[in-house]
Length: 414
Image (tube, rainbow, N blue to C red; front, side):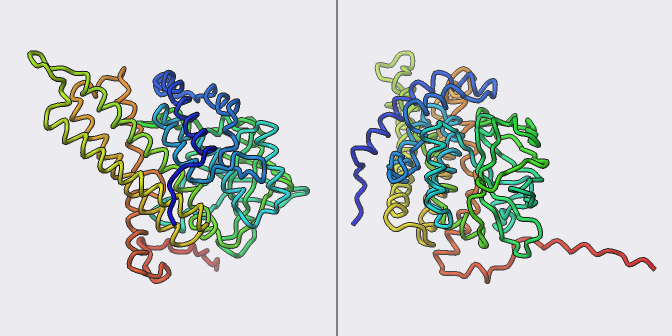
């Protein structure tokens, strides 16, 4: 039986997220303009006890489940989308680790202690410069892990590493050197020390259209040491473990952030139209039928996306990881990407010139919304997976969408 009623604990966290969003919004424009990390927001999230949002009660966390977090993320994103999107990397890392059955419970307790008692901020880095969510096999990590005494040394790059310069540890996957299985991967916590760790170089490439304060820069690892105790697990099936079994935290959590952006756009548009009175008329522009229609379309699409997201979150909390859970998340993410993109375009038309000024919040929200359809998996990748699963197709029987690279052949010297 479906029950979308939030528990008392979940509602307290949601209300707190809404309260914090109001404060975060006062600094969002500055961080967006200067593309600076909202460090003070991360500190406030820690002080308010929200570092444990994706950690179960068993390990000392808040225990609000994915559904509770999804609703809280929506509220945070209304205030500052960059804060919500980057902090989601912490939630992503903690949630994935706590949910991973290959990680022993004693290790999970140690990670929970790092976060809850020592106040360490984690981030997650999955993408690499050659990754594409349109080609699922390209997501398999190529960051090389070479075995040394007491641990591993890392060589290679990770891309789109949000919040990494503010983090104490990075949760990532690497490829163990010499392993013949192409999907063999090590899940590990890298002591990044806010980008200051030995062998770590931050390439400041994140001067972007939207989500500017996430500082999703490229990180290069050149001999960075990871001790054995921070190597959490090894998977022989990366795609299934990361894409399917951890879809709630690694994929769907971002969808909730973007849903919050879309709902923030709708709320801003409604307030602006309700306060704008054309000269010579007694009623604000909100009464105009075109204004009503545009806000009505936003509300209908975003409402449908919200409940699709809540159903997927509820199903995940209730039934756990499965192909059907993944299917639900892909449907919800597609709907969110579409609804948010449509809301951004419609808001610009409805608000007219008032939507173009840089000193007004709508400009930033629209730019942040531009990344909704391209955040992995992209809207096209979601539609592809939804179509495949809806028709009951076997992914193994689908042809590769691009021609495979020819193997490099060494010339034989005569």
